[in-house]
Image 1 (cartoon, rainbow, N blue to C red):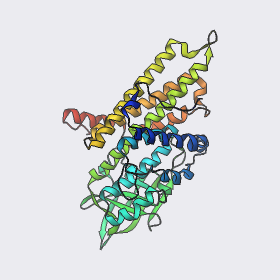
Image 2 (image 1 turned 135 degrees about the vertical axis):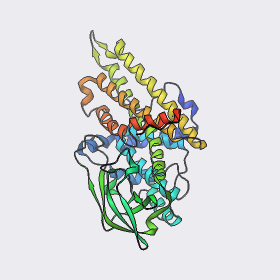
Image 3 (image 1 turned 180 degrees about the vertical axis):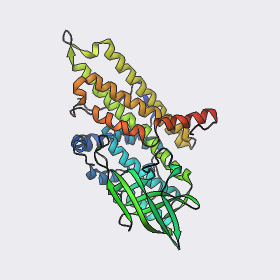
Image 4 (image 1 turned 90 degrees about the vertical axis):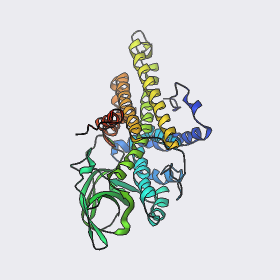
Length: 389
């Protein structure tokens, strides 16, 4: 395979600034030089490439679109381009960066006390600390407002009881942003590793996101001081606001996975010969599949770029992000499936990235809001009628 140069059918680079292109190229070089050589083994062995954490912190990937406390202060388009390049390498690495920035640093940055910000944000930004986000529970995924985890006051402290599951970074995290129901409504808490009553366990047997750490969190009479509560996080909307940040990054990220599948299939069909020693790319049915993929990828790029511009203007809505996430993930998954088909039996072996992307994207389609939930968010936006029940 030739060196990866990205996919730009409609000359979308003309819509990017020099700084945005430089950020993308820096992330692309990182993926090409440091992730691509190891990701096959990491995926096959079910391990996270933890040696890359410090490097990513040094490059400013964590909380890249946040201001202050050591963060890079990039635009949301630049942040999206980083997510695109990371997921071209693997969804698991992009998930790690998404959780660190959008689900841990963002709530601390938005709703934390000044003490919490000064203590955690610089350490999370440079990779000296790792965070996770505890919202999903064994019985509640798409309906987080029904969470069973409880926090009750005990003097000046809080006592937390409950369980969270499908938590990226859970067992390697130094701090967990945990959401719990209180008498005053849902609140967010910072639970540090080593706190009595707080334990983690990894989820094994995964056939998707194998190069990512996925865990369960258990809180059993876990006592926290008032200083562990995020003072500005009021209600379930705060937790959902974090998810909007992560979904935005996903909408960009999956473009990288889709492009990697497309470029792999395009190059393969140009050299694979059948029937009178002709490359299969010369056949009409193959060209139709390639034409569908490049068209849908291009549409997804335009959707991501417009959402990024709106986000930088402060005008993006959660329903816009739902469209971005829903459309682009479904598109990327279909590109992976079509690319696998074009490679035939070779599409399932790990000499090529397609089956790895396909398996990962099955999870990406589900987490941070399922395809169906996002359809209902969009439906409510265009009708004014909620149809969740």
